[in-house]
Image (cartoon, rainbow, N blue to C red):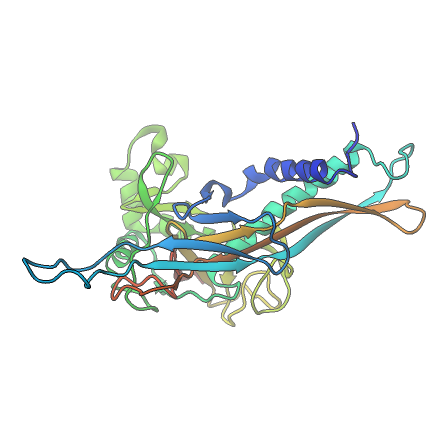
Length: 367
């Protein structure tokens, strides 16, 4: 079987199939959908190339006061609220060196095995890179600082989880950011509403060491194989669904904003910040004192990912009589936290516009 390289349609379909085969490795894919009900809202515009935009729309609910008795009601109608934002997609390419061509393969038509191996490796790197830019966007490293944070200083345990839930419900207790609408609940596959709380290993370890949490696990939790201590999971406390994510391993150029073009991703995950404000993987990062972890409280519609043109598989032989070649996965993408713009009016108290719609950062000093 040969790769129909001269057929754009078949080649792009084959590349897309390879990306889907690697999707099961993604932290974010189970949380991604085509509406604001998902944690990651995905939109596609197959005609969008580099520099083109993909629009996300959101309709607000009414909040007007009733007109009593025979008082004139006409002319007092509440204007419908409309919010939206957009993403400009950019072109990116991931490249792999295929090395020497296999003996016996006709020039201009590599065997399916070599193409498949390149596709597999490119698909795996694509998923890790995509996941990392979503982690970076949520943590505020990709150009959008958190609008609302909860700084727990050096204490993180069961009681702090209860305070976090209260803060999300009442908007009282944020370290930065004013009054806002509570995060929209994300619903699990069985329909249960929750806010996702994503922690790194350092935060998870602090929680496991907490006396109140240990008491819950060993005395109040269910017995048998479902016990949290036995299964090694956190599960749900109140309306918080606790999830532990991997830590980032790799290298990132500079100490400013991150991006797909700046990070070599070995393992995608959450980053930590050192005492100089440098994040894991950035130049000069140190595991010395004053190390902070940043967890993520996520609701529905927290992040947005936009895709433009269909991913393509590119292949190019060397000028030295084609004894080597390189392959690339070309794709059009961009991500960001959801920050809505009010096309009409915003709400007076339960603000929606110009804030992180579905993300709250939780900072903990872990060393």
